[in-house]
Length: 250
Image (cartoon, one colour):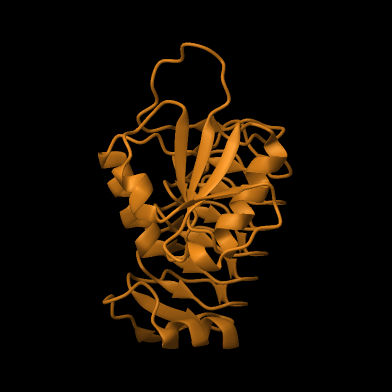
């Protein structure tokens, strides 16, 4: 079950059972922060789900404006048996954590959902892999593959024949030109432009508003127009505080 756009892409699912009857499933979202709630909003607009519920380890402090259910901490979901009546998506912005949690859920047999806002435009010849979330105004053009667990955020545009790696995040308003490769867990900052035929490695950060015209290797931070590498990343954690400050201030 996915939230659908007017043009239906080739959607890949993990662990999907053979359907017995048409019954709307429950969507379980891990993470009730900002990203998780944006996913819930997109899913609500699709009218594809019987119930939308959150699992969050800081659940006592969460309040929702939407008609959504707070089901408890993440461990409750992890301890449940997978069921065809419930699909799961990881609604956490941290790329590395989202990547790891989706793998754990797949190993436990859960079906991973894909959520596409009804106002996203998705080519019928693109491929959207399990766990991806495509937000309002996102554009996915022909021949492009969106990897498992990716975030294609509000008004981000991905042109033809791109390969977006697993658990990457293309932030709001970014433009990815044709035949670009973006690695696993890489973060493209808000309003950035990546020129055609560029390859960006795994675990790299491109600061907000940057213009990438040359290839970037794995595990670097690059900012500016044209983007320049300002340092290499240490991957003890997905984003340390200095990385976030660079993203917000450039």
